[in-house]
Length: 128
Image 1 (tube, helix red, strand yellow):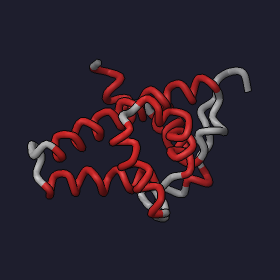
Image 2 (cartoon, helix red, strand yellow):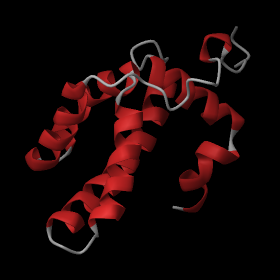
Image 3 (cartoon, helix red, strand yellow):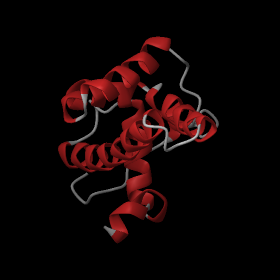
Image 4 (cartoon, helix red, strand yellow):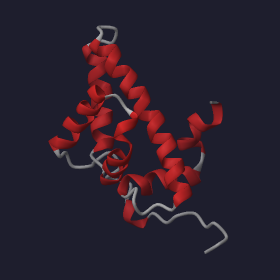
């Protein structure tokens, strides 16, 4: 996996796609949607594995609490919720209920609230 696992912080281009995607998955171009989706699906697969490890007594409550807080912060974003609507079926029903419960809480998206996302401009692709 190597490079793709570290792409979020190693690639300014992908970081911009990610920050635009959390705001609105629907507004991403098809290639950016694919990249965002591949990253976020891998991300949620890790969370799902940790959920089942916690359920089965292999992950402590405090460790699961950390994971759940991170998930809650990210899932609060409208773009992530748009992505989830399209990709929920990629995950188990049990984990789907966990994510749905987080969405139902209706937390304000704050994880990137200090990043001034309104000023985020996508990278030039040469076709613009």
